[in-house]
Length: 397
Image (cartoon, rainbow, N blue to C red):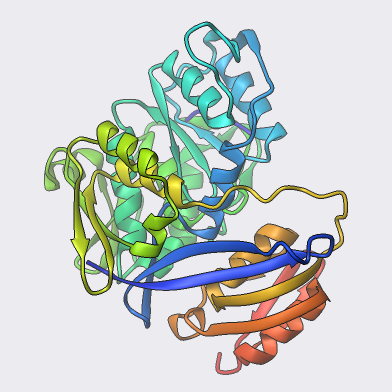
């Protein structure tokens, strides 16, 4: 496998924080947490904290041109320069020489996402951004794999397992694929007796940064036409062909977007989205107020991009000092803090009874340590910080 280094009821979450230099301008990060009940939270697969970090990296300006460069080198350099994990399917022609110009007379490649998409077109591939990783997969498989990923994270029974951060993070050059698949199974899928036999393959060195089990499973299994799916409330590994035969071609999936979410988008943006995804069906929901969208998974991805807040602008002052109002559930707040401070919280995701705890604070020029202390007291938990790692200690665990 080719791997490169480098409806539902909606609950409103608002995180409002201001930097030390811009106390008067409050940063609002509004995200929708979808749930069948508060005790079983199901987050939009393309709006998890790490998926948003990945989306922000893809929105970064593209400042690179590539001439007679291998596809593999383009991916590696782009990943390194933009702090991305970019996984490449073993069947993609990574040795192919390609030329990519920011302004090629046909279209401007202004963002990293546009750069990667243009490069993938030259090797009959497509990108699939997920939670913590961007997968480069065969163009013919992209939509099917997106559906696999969506169903894993949207599952109410196995979503907490599939959405957890994977413990399988990195390996050296020349690792045996079958051994790595078995390691993944033994760590995350002990109820599955064995991995189906796969052909012998050596993988390049790779490092997942903060990818979910669902994301990692898509990357590791898809190159061998396998996938992780839910069957009778359990996770099982099956062939992609069997999964494809179990769903309708072009199947639509449903998600409820709150009215306040949709109001943050522009009329022209929604119009362009609808023209791009003509098979999508949008209906109004009265209770709760919003829009029930039936669309393909990639159409939901495209719509979610309209809802993700812009990447926070970096300031000259790097001090982690905050002022402003905080209104959020605990799970979402920790994801936001992780994004701003590069801290790694463990374990995540939290159990539902803690994930849904509402945090309300009004802070003035507090440091990150002071903010964590306030959050811990309100949530009745403890934080133990060691370097960039923060252990979450729950009183009843």
